[in-house]
Each structure stands twice: as structure tokens, then as C-alpha cells.
Amino acid sequence: MTNINRREFVKLAGGFFAAGMMWFPYIAKGAGGKIVIVGGGTGGATAAKYLRLTDPNLEITLIEPSKEYHTCYLSNEVIIGERTLESLTFVYDGLRKRGVNIVHDSVVGIDPVAKKVTTASGAIFNYDRAVISPGIGFNWDAIEGYNEQVAAQIAPHAWKAGPQTLLLQKQLQAMPDGGKVIIVAPPNPFRCPPGPYERASLIAHYLQQHKPKSKVIVLDSKDNFSKKPLFIQAWTKLYGYGTDNALIDLIDGPKGGKVESFDSETMTLQTEIEEFKGDVVCIIPAQKAAKIAVESGLVAGAWCPVNKRTFESTKHAGVYVIGDASDAAKMPKSAYSANCQAKIAAMAIVDSLSGREPGIAAYTNTCYSIAGKDYGFSVAGVYQLSADGKTIDDVKIGKDSEGKDLLAGGSTPIDASPEMLKREVAYAHSWFKNLTQDVFA
Image 1 (cartoon, rainbow, N blue to C red):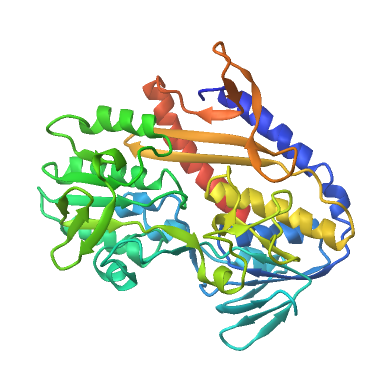
Image 2 (image 1 turned 120 degrees about the vertical axis):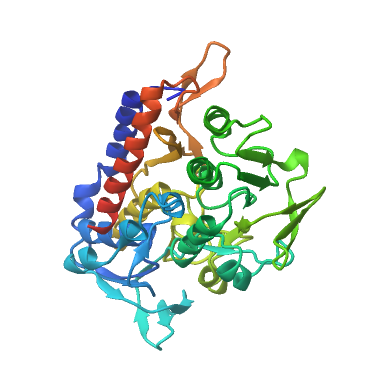
């Protein structure tokens, strides 16, 4: 890693995690109560498991419409045919075995005053505390001509793994050699900040093998993005970025990369400056908290404001919002962040039910990106609550020779060896196995 090496990061992150877990044995003496969890993704499933682990007396109900959950993380490998969707598919049997009541239904209402959750079938679930982990919604008004129907049938965003992931895969396979794949990256903040650029990398990898006359064009309204120097270096080394024969072109904000409209009949995108016509178009829309969070009055702006120490909503007491829907910057909207936030909220809930002050939270995030064969890199962060309790800030561990802050964690060094880059791919796959085991087992 750039700022400290991986071993030092693990030791530091482990130390912070241990600090946050010091009060865990006391939580196990919880007072019980009814907990309703809305959303069975990484955040919601983790919360259910760790609530059960912290207090066996709790009555826990998790409400999730889908019987299977597909992880978005590693779904870019599905798009290029190097992984099956089934390998990203998880069910809720592990939570059932732990005594969690799993209800497959859609939540249509959350009443924070009456403390009840209502589902589409008419069922009502009372709660003492609620955990809301609904994920993201999309701003369909951001690009003229792009809507849910167009996304489902013509220009998939594939930002929720499932049918659109497979549609994008089929479109890529059917595209003739010499075709253009256009990816439209969303404005900040959004789920999985490096994701669009990993997708561009892996599609370029696929084209290099199967359709070498083709090209990926990334249209982006921003002038910077997560891990940009590492991605640009990978594109240069692997795909001829910056040359006449490049497999990837980037049209960013300064170059007029903001997309204003999409014509689905001609597959044409209009930016601020010029038109782009694609054979395969992947538009990732601007994002916000999911619809149920908005309708339940949990949102301010686009996201759900929370107490950064506990993730309890600042709009409604007794409701905890975790994962992508929460406003938890500087933590990115990632699976690892959701997993971490779920554990913090679980402990805070049991503390609250038992009349105790919440413990000191520990915040960490790790994110891997795969740019090509045997070529990966990562970023990791350790965070802490600010002195005033209003923000989550990077942990600083000193100053460099120029007097700039050194942060805990960091990223894969820009001069990483081929062996290190290859190991990062193995680490990414191991990270996936460990995370999903932690969430669903």
C-alpha cells in the first residue's frame, strides 16, 4: 500500500476493530426486543447475523422480496464470461438456521411513530428497533431518453446484479468485431466508486481476446475517480491507452464527457460537445437512496442522514440506516462499508435496548479492482469518528517528508511489481469468499 504496507494496515485495522469490539461481551447480556430489518443485501443480512450473535434473546425479522441475492461485487467478471451469475448467488438458509425470521415480501411502509413495518401482502411487523438497508435508487431524470424500460431492454446499467448483468453479457457477445462499447459513469456519490472503470477494463480484456478491432469508450462528467492513476496505468500497459490503437478511450468532464441525452433507437448519446454512437451502451444512472427510504421520510437530499456513531437515523429515532442508502462519508458506498456499518449498528441497537451508551465504533473499508489477466489493485481505509461526532474521518498516522498527512490504509503502489498485481487478483477472490461467508453463513 502507498502509505503503509499491508501487514501494518491489517494490524492497525485489527486494533481499531478490537477497540470497537471491547464491549461485545457485555452486549451479549442484552435485554431482548423485536427487530425488523428491511433489505436482505450485504448490510441487512450482516445486521441480522450480528444482532443474533450479540443478543440471542432478540426476535429478528428480515424482510426481503427476493429469495436469492446476487452480489454486485465481482459481477463485472460475469459480464465478460469469466464467472457465472450462480457463483454470485446466495440464499438465506444460514440466517434461518440462526433463528432469524426471513419474510420474502416487499415493504411498502415504515411508520416510525407507531413503530411498524407494512408489506405488500398486508402483513404488519411491529418493532422496538428497525434497520433499514434498502440500497440505491436511480435518478431517471438525469439523462433525457433514459428510463427503466430502456435500461431493462436496450441499454442496461447492470448496477444491480441479475437479469441486466446477463443482458449486457449477451449484448457484448453478439456485438460484431469493430463495434463500440460505451459506458456512461455516474456522478458522485454512487455505489462502488471504482466499478465503472473496472467494468471498462474487463470489457477491454474481453475485446482484446475476442473482438480486437473493437473499443470501449467511457463517458464521464467527472474529472477524477477512485483509483484513477492505477486504472490509467493499467489501461496504458494492457490496452494501449493514449495511442491510436487504444482499446479504451476516456472522455471525462474537462473533455465534455457529461451525457445529456440518449436516443435508444439509434443508440446515440449526446454529450455537451459531441455525439457518440455505440453498438453496446451501458448507462449507469445517477443514484440516491432507495424509494422506500424516501417514502418513509428518512432522506435529506439524496441520502439518509445518520448519527455517525450508531447509524441511527437523525430523522426518526429507533430507525438505523446502513449501507448504500446512508450518508456515511468519508466511507464509500461499498459492500465492505455496509458490512462494517451493520456490525456497528447491531451493537448500538443492543446497547440502546439495554440502556447503555454505545461503544466506540471502528470503521474500515477494503475495495479490490481487477483490470485484466493477473492484474489487480486495491484501496483500504481506516476511519474514526470526528471529535464533534458529526463526520467519519480518515485516521492519520503522521506526516511525510513534505509535511503532508499520512493516512492509515492506502492503495496498491503505482510501482507495484507484476507479482504483486497478480496477488491482488487472488486477494480479491479471497476477499469475496470471506465477505460472503461472513454475511450469509
